[in-house]
Structures are given as C-alpha cells and as structure tokens.
Image (tube, rainbow, N blue to C red):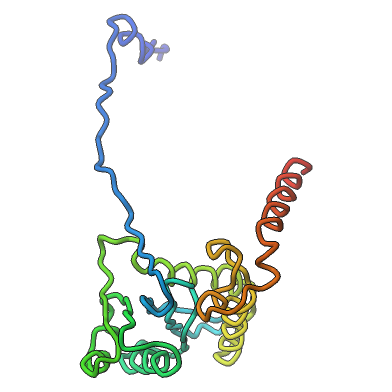
Length: 224
C-alpha cells in the first residue's frame, strides 16, 4: 500500500486565516477569609487528626490552639474519636487556661457536636463557634500545626507504640510552644505571646538572623 499524504493540520487554518476563539471562562474572584483575634483566649481552635504508626495502629491527636498566639493550650492522643474525649480536653483547657468568655471554633464532626460538649455550653463554660465551609481559613491555624508536626517531626521518627508516639508529640509541642521563634509572631515564641512573658534575647536579634539565613540560602543555591 502506498503512502497516503495527509495535509498538515494547520494548512487550511493558515490558508483561510481561521482563528481559535479566545473567550476565556471568567471565574468569580474568591477572597479567602482569615480569622484573627486581638488577645489570647479570645478565640481558640479545636481539631483532630489521625496518626498512623509503624505497627499499623491508628491514633487520634486532638488539640486546642489559641488563635492569637498559636499556643497549643491542650492536647490528647486517643485510640478513637469520642464525644467524651472532646469534652475532657475542653474541660482541661478551661481548668488551666480559658474563661467562660472564650470562644472555641470547631467543625461539624460528631466528636464536637454532641450532648457532652453541649452540657459544657449549657453550663456557660465557653462559647462554641462552628467552622463554616465558606471560610477556608477558619480553622487553618490548627491545621497548619498538625501539618508541621507530621512533616517536620513525626515523618522522620520510627514510632512503634502509643508510648513512643506520646513521647514524640510531647517533645515537639514543648519545643513548638516554648523554644521555637515564629516569624508570624515577629520572632517570639507562642508561649511568650500567649502568657505575656518578657521577650527573649533571641527575639531581639530575629530580624538580623532571618536576613542572614536568607542570604546564606541564596549563596548555597548559587554555589551548587
């Protein structure tokens, strides 16, 4: 069979000056809504995430994070998601840190919307706010904390038991709260902001150290 000559696919488009339609689909501009409180304990976030260890077991880390300072107020690791765990965690936070005027934002999970938590609200222990789907950043601060814990710490550890998991989470939260300066807090630690503690010496040199780190990174990229 002889070769069949197929005209170039753009031949007639060029010959007759056909043009492709340039109408683009116009999507409505979306504005992400961020939530920022002005003082500690004004607004907090509670959320839960699953942690899987090397023996195949699954555990649930539930935490409460202060919106203003990003301080982890309370946390627990449980084998399952139950209403009583949420109520106990909130009670622990109320006993140690919070006040009846504190607002706690939570999603619509069954571990949050239940009679145990409702009873705390009826007793005027705190004010509940349910996170809405149309506010993408509503619970973002605690979600960022979970992501940081997993990617920066837990993924590099060999964890085979619940005891080891609790030990690693305890270590990370202690460092996160007390020792690690946060750029969004102008170099202060969450504990310093949350408890109004004197600014550490590290904070005073934060802008300089940040500038030096960026310059060192630039040099590293160009020399490799």
